[in-house]
Length: 123
Image (cartoon, rainbow, N blue to C red; front, side, top):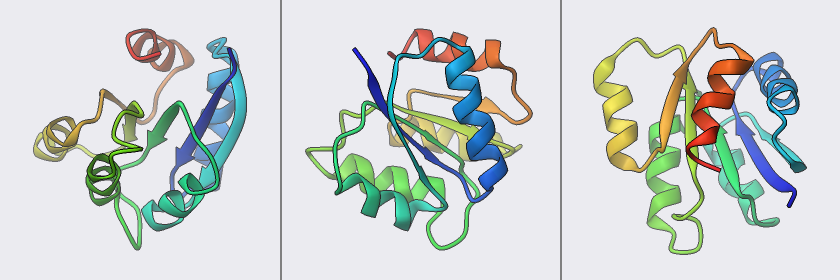
């Protein structure tokens, strides 16, 4: 069954790379929606359901942790699995993302195999 995916990152290049990696990882993709920050992502989520979110932590306007907190506070969205994809070196921020409900994280730079392995336990 095709999976609608939301990719949230302030870098358009990273969003395109993640899209390509999902294809390489044989994820059965439906619509792939992109957002440049947490504010835009929350707005896009009102347009229709998604089955997976890949989100950066460090972004302008609303970072990934604040986005995750807002997402998990919404009863209709809190069940959507979230994988954090980040350059964040701070273990504290990564642990905070897990505490907020992220299903896991991958550090940039990443490989298609790393993303596929993380997604295997999520979708």
